[in-house]
Length: 314
Image 1 (cartoon, rainbow, N blue to C red):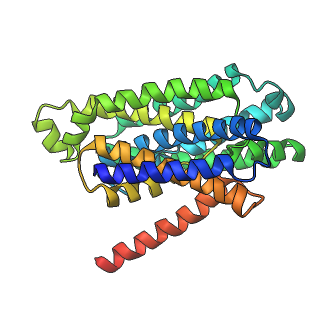
Image 2: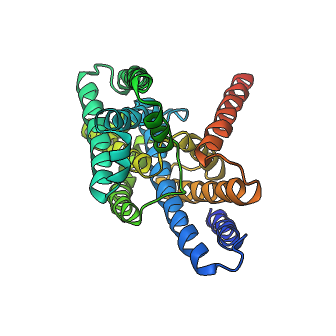
């Protein structure tokens, strides 16, 4: 597995070098400052999404689930829609400060964790009822967001759409530093829980018999998932579907229950996909679209193809 990690690291190094040096036209300092900031954002998002998705799939024992199934991405969309609707799009964009970023992250993470915690307490059958409640809430959030967007001024609606699509083009340095601290704390907590996650891989029943406080562990893990997902979403917009692609490739390359390897491999794979994808979209093909749109399209095709393959096997 070490060889695979070194290979991924080498591919990332090649992709990052190509992205930093391609089409700079001699403006090395400007290109390095702009693209270097984006590469740092790639790393943060890759860590947050890979850690949260792999952890969620371990807790639920289902490799088709992502944090999006809990309604967290739709919750972010609703929070942003409410802010633009009541405060105004121009004021929201003019107040693009560290405080506003912290507000978006905190509100999304806190509401998400409270929502998950509420349904967790009410869920008699555990996580399955929780996930069903998350799906229903996600649909409700999406419907309410659509209703408010219909009532919006067309100009403010256009500004809102720019916020809702994942974009690494306009990232505030202050936002990066705050996001880095939050993601570092959240991922470090999950790293400390690796022994418990390895036991949860055997199943909740087995882990409980081995002395793991499963109920409290689930609550803490779900809060960390909401925190990491909310931070990544507030930083670059909804791109949670990336987690399914990253986790699936990680399980194929690293067939192990040890979450240390899974976290490391997943982070590198996510980083490689983001750097390579941005390089192709922005520099090679020069498409007038966001990498989030490409991720959603390719991820959807990948998800459907995997479902069809699994159906043929069964």
